[in-house]
Image 1 (cartoon, rainbow, N blue to C red):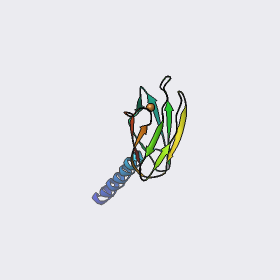
Image 2: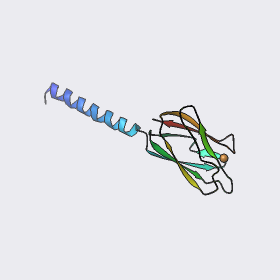
Image 3: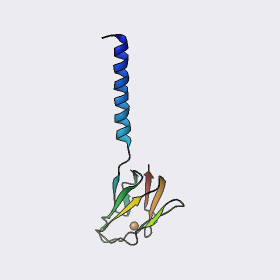
Image 4: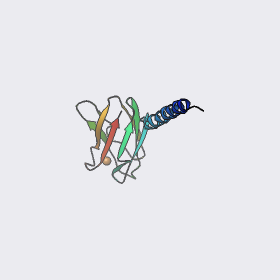
Length: 113
Ligand SMILES: [Cu+2]
């Protein structure tokens, strides 16, 4: 095999590697966040723009109330009873902090890409 051919193969391999890396880094369209022990789990999540996060209240008998109030994007699920799930579509790219209206220490960092 010639040296030039080798170099070309290397470039092709590099391209395939980059495609794999970029593909793996793509934000998912669906995320799942539970509310447990008065915390969001996981505490940070990434989702593709237009994607959905499913919030599940898995916290015994506690109510939660998920909301986000930012200049570019906001939502309010209202009170969410134990065992209930609700879905929110994130239509705007950016980084946001989702809060609980009942438990001020609950914070969820959301990166929408
Ligand atoms: Cu809460």
